[in-house]
Length: 258
Length: 231
Image (cartoon, rainbow over all chains, first blue to last red; front, side, top):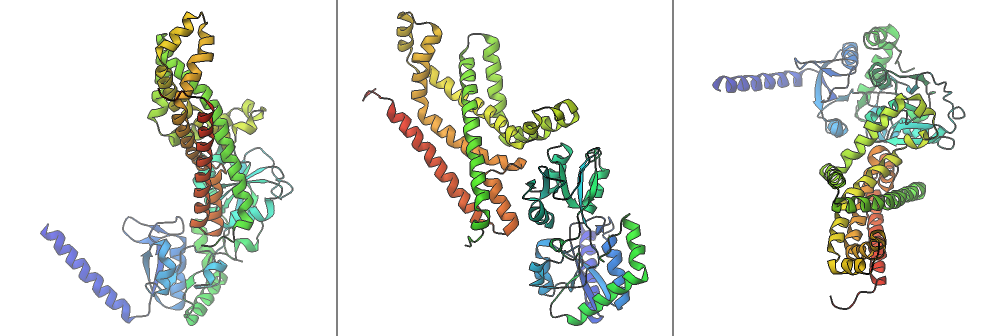
């Protein structure tokens, strides 16, 4: 018991010194949601963070010569945390949307994952609105995929809305939905699983303003200089090949935001 | 409070209302027929029939309705996809729709709960009336049709009104298997407009009005059957 308390006191003291040290240098607090989002951000058993976005932010920090510290936040409160200066950057697969742009600034997009159609193997499907006439399209409600399906397919196809991606996956596997539209990263994982064994990709949805420009780093509107630094750094790692080297570690497809 | 979404999503809610009413009427009708079988089965002198009825009631009343819906929809329903014969049959459009799974689940549920209620009502009919019918030489079926069942239902009308309102509220579980009933429609409005309370408020009032309507209908039925002033 005594040693536990001792350890606790020691670790508190260590944290305090760490915090003090950080305050003096130009340290950027990088906000990520506490729950992991593999392969983008994964928390190791040692407490260290790793993943595609962690590698990416480390290269960006090297590029702008800043000390970066990963700081865990709850996803719900991550924007208020940014605006109240608990963190300095949100780097956690946040889509750039007009609603969010009302409250925070975004860097240029650093990755973009297209939406993918998934349907049963052995069925020929043309994923244009004319090709899916009379078919049932499944989407998760409150996603840009739902908005996309509603805009282009509602007149000719039946759209079924699901509360969670899991329920939608189950219904596609059970053949209750002819085709679903979901994020390609999620689709890749699902198609590899046992439930997705009889399904296959039916191609990507075309790029559309509804999907937005992609994923960007969230910044305070007042930090104009930092936004410029981030924009340049993202541009540099994309042209220098660093981005490609990192994404090859995690993905077979190209997810760069072009 | 903002209701500007009502113009865009009004028809979604109306379609949801239609689905809810269809669920209510279909499962109410078939469930009542099943409940009659269960009710008489519970009173049967055949031990096998009595045991089967009792087991069915116990099974339905002993498990949550949501679990029953999931078992039917995700369990039984997802087996069909493995059989090409089923997939190509004319039944497939029904077998893939969550709607029919909910109708079946609700029908079974009504059969279990109302069956027990009907058993009680059948027992509640004064023995003398049945003896009188028998003394007049009525066959068993005629006695059931003319005396036993009408008298039991008359006694049970208030409980049946309650069960019907309960059924109405159970239909809201349909939205858990992607059926666009009233609650499903409200969830869609919530997901797409980020408005939470307004659509929920609208459907809460919708359910309340429907419940009051059901009570009304049963009140009418109760008044239609003349009852002698004092018992």
